[in-house]
Amino acid sequence: MALRNSVISWIMKKRMHQIELFIKYPHDVQEEWFKTLLFRANDTEWGKKYDYRSINNIHQYRERLPISGYEDLKPFIDRTRLGEQNILWPSDIKWYAKSSGTTAGKSKYIPVSKHALEECHFKGGKDMLSLYVNSHPETLIFDGKSIGMGGSNRINEVNNEAYYEGDLSSILIQNLPFWVEMSRTPNLAVALMEEWEEKINKMAQITMQQDVTTIAGVPSWTMVLIKKILELKGEENIKNIWPNFEAFFWGGVNFEPYRKQFNHLFANEPVNYWQTYNASEGFFGIQDKLGADDMLLMLDYGIFYEFMPMSQLEEETPKTISLDEVILGVDYALIISTNAGLWRYKIGDTIRFTSLNPYRIKVSGRTKNFINAVGEEVIIDNADKAISIACEKSNAWVNEYTASPVYSLNENTASHEWVFEFEKAPDNIAVFVDALDDALKSLNSDYEAKRYKNMVLQEPVVHIAKQGTFYKWLKMKNKLGGQHKVPRLANNREYMDEILKIM
Image (cartoon, rainbow, N blue to C red):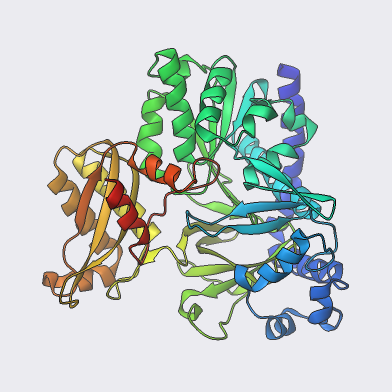
């Protein structure tokens, strides 16, 4: 075991040289990938449509190609799923990451090419470990087993040709390199089970007997697994079961609302929490230093980045900027062109740069997940920070939450309606609500202005849900497990009304 840990750690450290290269020459690396992507796609249907061969620079590329959402590319993706190839990307595409972004009913089928698997997703996984090893040179994570909190996939057949669809996590698990598969647990038959509750049960029974050193996954579903293991073993500290557990690699949501609960599950014993930014569309960011709350933007994964200032979001022909034009502290919608055939694709996330040398980012929210009832523009980043402050002041732990606007009868005023599911309820709910409101005022000047003397925006309306309410709602929506997440903010009442009905 020790030898394997030493060999793998040495391989991880070697990759650091390539990471240092794109840190040193970020714009050259991005320009090179821009040219490579267009060259590869010259003879695809899409490449011919926009005459990629005659595009000589990024300015021409922006002028010629519109920014795309999923609905714009869907007809081309649907044709590929029906067996046609060389449409958006030259290599045959057999894998599709099924994603809704949140819990919306309509699924997206994001193409995952062989290039994307090898040059992006697997490279990102290796770099996640490389950056971790670089910061923890004495690590022993490779001496034990790793758990990936994956979803499920299924085979579809069209014209005697099989293609696969499922959560990105399940696609990655099914295609893992052998050296990763050797360390992973549980076996594929369990890891890819479709029925989530049965899967959690079997995963718990298998993994609680093993020496697990790492987990990678979404915090909420990881917590479900750990709690199941503790229940089965009659323990309160997971370290009593996994004494060598070292690191939790997480992504998908803000970790802060979960931090206290994870610390409790580990009885405040040392555990490293390491952040990643991996989506169905690509692997974009990885934490690269101890104690950081931001991530290194990964520039050599077959993705060309553009950034749309939020002021351009509703424009008919929105303008984007390149990496060398971004500034600190501004929220940008992320636009990508990728080695799976997503061209000038708006993925729906907003990011904010925290450093320009090297380029580091934070995910600040979603372009569709916000509340703007009266011009207050509250985003997820505001909400997560405000909740963290309110929890601190009221001695509470939030498990899940969602919020949306609610309008008064005369429609001249509105308020924000919140549903919280607490792991540990506040000592005083009024203290929690006041602290939440005050924190939002301090974090968002538009919210503060609209809350002035309750003239436009009334004080928050807060409901406390029983534990398991959001789980029940996700189950009702057939959205248990994998990468499915509770939508934090919505500018309509679709989710809120459904949840209140369950309550």
